[in-house]
Structures are given as C-alpha cells and as structure tokens.
Image (tube, one colour):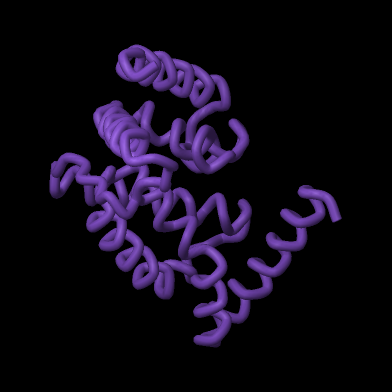
Amino acid sequence: MDADDERDRGAQIDRWLVGKAREGDPQAYEELIRRHRDRIYRIALRITGNPADADDVTQEVVIQLWTALAGFAGTSAFTTWLYRVVVNRSLDHRRRHRAGPEPRETDLAPVAGPERSVVAGEEVRAGLEAIARLPETQRVPLVLCQIEGLSYAQAAAITKTSEATVRGRLARARATLLAEMRSWS
C-alpha cells in the first residue's frame, strides 16, 4: 500500500469515526482523538513554543472537538478541519498568554557525546525560540508545511489563504530562520 492509499484509508476511517461520534458514540470519539492527539500536540507545541502551553491547547482542543464536531460540514477532510481548529486555538492561547518558549531538556533529541549534547540542545532551543519569534503569518505555514509535511494546498485550506500566499509566507519564514540560525552553522 502506497502513501496515497494509506492517506485515503485514514480519511475513510476518520469520516466513519466522525459520523459515529456525531451520533453520540463516545468510543468513536475516543478513537478519533487517539488517532490525532500526537499531531494536535506537535502542532500546538510548534506554534506556542512551550510544552506546557501545548499541553493546555491539546486539552482544550480535545474538549472543544466533542461539541465542535456538530459544526463539521464534511466539505473538507477531517484533518484539514482539525488542523484549522488546532492552529486557531494555539494562536488564541499564545495571544492570551504572550509567554516566550521554554523548551525542556526532555524535548530535545539525544545526541552522542556530552559536548555535542550541550551544543545540540542549545541549537534546538535556539531553533524553537527562532520559530516562536516568527510572525504568526509565517510560523503557521512553516509548522504545517515544513514540520508537519502538509502540502501547500492543505496548508492553504487550513489557513484560508491561497497556495501562493502559503508559499510566499513559507519562503519568508525560511529566510528569517536561516538568517537567525546562520551563527549555528
């Protein structure tokens, strides 16, 4: 089974689970959340720049989805709609709290050697902080396309902009990050 078949199968499962959850089936809702919880957290973390805030946003989204499913029209893929909910909730949370990123040591990927671990940890921290400083119009496309691997079309649907706008904002975000991280290379 190739990646497209896998995505189509996942979308079919999501549609079925959404239908059952909208009928009031709590097990279907729990399965839907189980399938997407990690992705919800990752997107929230990249947008808020703070693990504690990402946890808060994830909990808010999980709670919100139970009632929000009634408003899901099904005109787009469930994941597109879900990403829009997560992005909006993350941006709202960030605006309310205006806290800077505080990545924890446990969020960093392990690297061999103590010196390299320190440098890698500082580099990751600097990268997370640089992403968190991006304007939200650049940060969101960067998270969706570069980090989550969504297509320009998917990101455009989530952000309610054109593909050209997503490409332009992503290019500006990459250029900004490159300039900020140049000292690490």
